[in-house]
Image 1 (cartoon, helix red, strand yellow):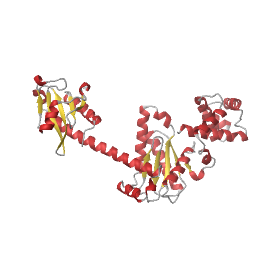
Image 2 (cartoon, helix red, strand yellow):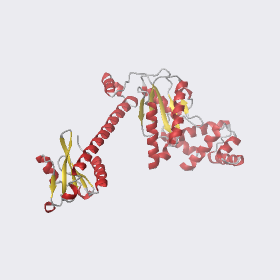
Image 3 (cartoon, helix red, strand yellow):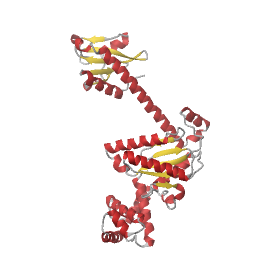
Image 4 (tube, one colour):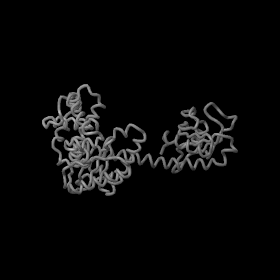
Amino acid sequence: MFISARSAKQIALKISSIVKQNINIMDENGYIIASTDPKRIGNLHVGAKKIIDEHLAEFYVKKEDETLTTRAGLNLPIRINGKTIGVVGITGPYDQVFNYGQIVREMTEILIRESYVKEQERLDKKIENRYLEDWILGNGKEDGQAFVERGIELHIDILRPRRAMVLRLENFRSLSGTSAGQKQIERVEKSIRRFICKQPTNIFLSLTTKQICLVTPRDDNQMMQLAQTLIQEIQETCGVQLLAGIDDNPLGTLDVKTAYFKANKASHACRQPAQITLYSQMTAEIFLAEISPDAKREYLHRMFPDCSIEKIRLWIHLLEIYFEEDGSIERAAKRLFIHKNTLQYKLRKLAFITNHDVRIPRDCALYYIAIQFFRDLQSL
């Protein structure tokens, strides 16, 4: 076991706030890796080096023995499982620091053990995620039995059929731009993991913009119910909207890579008021998703010439409401909180800009494609 600089810094600050003295933590070679006096970090601490080399129970540096890199204070070995892994130093006169020296050492050892456990959990999770990415997104299965056995070591049975569901945050972009939003995203991820992993054989993998869930086989209605329950719970507890895409394998499959591909494609096809899309329900979205991002951008700029991305966003929002209300001017205007005459004016203005009128059936498809392309680009 060793002390990481990050953990040592947190421990030094925490203990210093309690004992109201400067705290230094030295590594197994005697170098200062954390200190409430940042200028001392990186220096060799003579007292710590002496403790390590001579296996001393403590060493006090007197005022007259101070150097440029060593100050007066009490230094004590940090011992974990019978091995000295570093030294903790408390700056100050002996009569002030002696009384709580042992307490500080014990606190340091406890905090290091806790930090080690957390770090180990983080590394274990990283190893598990890398395996899941190889399995779901990569070509891990090409390693054959060796890959299966790696899964067994990680308590992941890849020979069990599963269904795939991909979840996305509807407003991920706006949330990811702030620290408060990032914390909310983390809360959502933890809540989804807890919900999905209630059943031990289910698998959860969180990626930057989406969450992948592999669950025990069930029919489409049951999958829809599972997704709806989860969406409702996240809405109530975290205050955000989830979109869910589901594959087309009611009996489950071992080919989770293809199942994920289909569920992911379905998640991109979600639109209000429906927050859940089955891959089997998809039509034009199947081939629209195959078009490159560059081609989609070019299409949007041709459809909305001389429009900024924010202006396009506003037109897309208006079009989404219009389509969701099946072209009803009255209902769409009500949802947009504008008069129906104002909506008619906006649609005429859009037709002037694009040279295509959404109220004419032959032009509707062009706008439907534009909406899909815009959504796809926003979710990249």
